[in-house]
Image 1 (cartoon, rainbow, N blue to C red):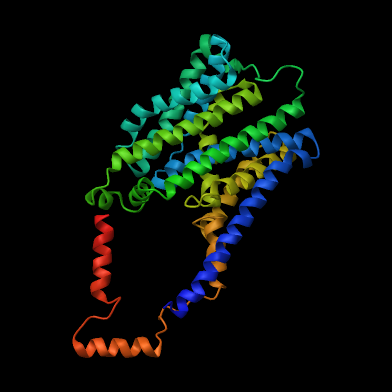
Image 2 (tube, rainbow, N blue to C red; image 1 turned 135 degrees about the horizontal axis):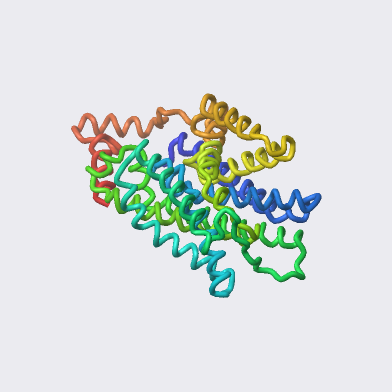
Length: 374
């Protein structure tokens, strides 16, 4: 016989599921209709930039959100993905979309030895190693001018012919970025609910304890690191095909990696849509301040203030803060289970007979042991 708390909890769970479904549907509708509602090509291009940031932030979150390893050098993978895609198109003449996929796979292969070397350290040491990698990439691609164009940059042929006007290019790339983002979000959601995801989150909470309990921590970290590098490279390659020009100073900028971290922290690194929300806020703010204040560095000051506010008042991000606020004002089920008169009489009878009532400590211990064995 279901208890009163179960009766209250079931409709509440159904309501939460319905609200999530409505929110997801609203997000899909907003993404699909945005290019049609954009007032001009500039607004549409801003939408492409925000989508690009959302792909990069979500890709970063495979490492930062699951394992807690804060990489400030993820621009090395987006930059490598952009240059790999552009160079393959220029020097081999293959289909740009095949070049994009091949570039992502090449970067994933490169990420294996990099991950093996860098994931042996933690905390500040890992952050320093990630920054060192992006600085090395910057020096290499600036100096290797015969291949990369050096400081003069590299012009990448666009995948659509000259008959396709720039606004239509923006629209197509907006939807392509949205498709890649959907794949990354789906994979993040699947991992989050898998045994692999449980192991990654155990690493995030206490890596030493997770290893002591039998979690293959290094292998799990390396797999998450390579997945993150792969999707980050795809995001960088898409940017190269859309923008049509690569500059090593921008592609391998520490600021790009810092933006990924800021976006994820702002929205909430432990939530599925946290990086997306952070990308919308930070991406729009960047473009707004750049349009208002030109080439000045005021946008960096504004973003620094934004990050300070988030850290002080919403340290877990916007989505967890809002979720906690909603729970505060939502009536919760009583922690004391209501017992009917018949159940109370049955428990009294079992107690007099020396038997353990159902749901007692023995049952709880058995459930825990069975869960551990499974």
